[in-house]
Image (cartoon, rainbow, N blue to C red):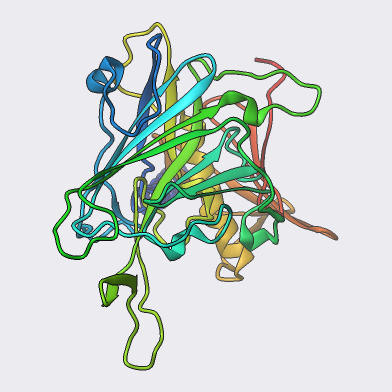
Length: 363
């Protein structure tokens, strides 16, 4: 009888310990910021790119949530928000940028536009954090569009000469541009990007009907100096430029837009009455794996246990189910992966930061 009681007690203690570890893991995961989401509606209306949002489709579609500071804690000085639409040819963006002093100086395409106040769009169609696109525009309608093979942390190649072929852009100022004698309301941005920008050579364009992309938006804003009515970025007493403000749609948690795993989710809705996009369960696992990846990459995390010949993390509760992350080291670097309890797929982040999925063939 004593033997049975001891075994029962030992089992209960093991179960209690596992539940406690899962509880701690759940708390750890809850501390992470959930990326924002937006539903972009399909339109049949002809959208004229004039910066004014005059079409009924623009009037009836929803605004995004207001932008927040890039680290996710401070409320910006001025409000920013956007809308999106799409049809079979274009993705449409409309942004409203509150600004009492509208100014811009850069007129050369593909110069560093964020040296002016600007509005920025980041697009990662397949959500693997590689092969993504950046767009910047100032109040003079000067743009910078570029392609990035990988985030800067992974030594990616940046192609400034790359262009969104067929892009249409327009600016409308609710006030007067580069006039320091009055107070403005702000400026609006309207952009149409052809879907064809994602088409590989010899391939066909795929419009993501009822699918989602990882997307984020940023607004760079500077304190300014005035010299005889001319605006410029403000400097400190030593002649150095003061740091810019970075206000974004989906907070990054760090002052760095080039961690695409933090970007928001845009769902391209067609023919459904969807009013809320539910982020897939596997994406929650992905956020956790990228947190581990960043720590391993910067050598800030050594707490991996060797279990059955594998380096593992303690189980963590994600969406109510336990997930175990595995670290595999090899001659070329490392992989971090976990098997999803939702799909049975193996979710993998490779040493260069690229995300891939090994799909369960039994599904």
